[in-house]
Image (cartoon, rainbow over all chains, first blue to last red; front, side, top):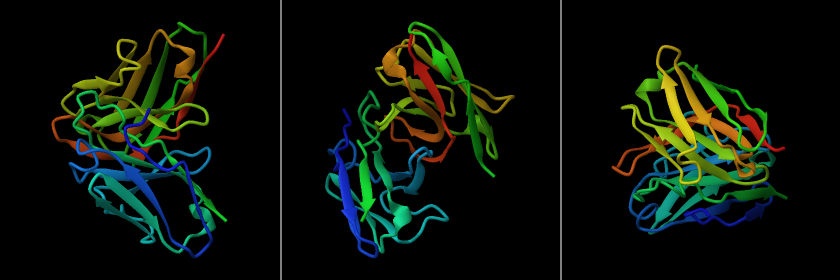
Length: 112
Length: 122
């Protein structure tokens, strides 16, 4: 079981904005600015979209943004496009001695 | 250009062993945290193991004592030796640059390989 909780699914229409949440604890999301987000299309490897809560790697569209409040991090995608339909995973630094629960359970984004 | 290419997956019987390889180019494996992450069919991502730039290693409880992560600096290659395989180890295994320690270091998984499928079945 993941230590980070994400909604199983979200959906939106083209052009709309959606937000995916990632809830942890003060030992991970809430305690450190080390949250990252990954996009995964079917049959493909994950791709880093956001790191350190709100930073975008070079080449990632500015339609993707990240934020954090307390123990919950969020990924917002604005101006939804059909190509954004994918699974999204959050990941956080954890002070747990086992390093378990590095990833959230994943969220399936459907573009209607 | 950074590239990670995994190999070594396949069909293996329960109790068997397999060694996965991840050949890196465009950066030096030994200077980075390197991890293995797996994904069971239809499931989410699961972190498996990390090797730190200093050489220390760490494992998920589910594989501890059965899997061994290592690297060959001369070949710039990461490995995962998997012993005593179980049906629940069936997954696509990805190598990725990045990882974390519980002493405050965190590097996002910024590069991933294409994955190699391991199927454990009789």
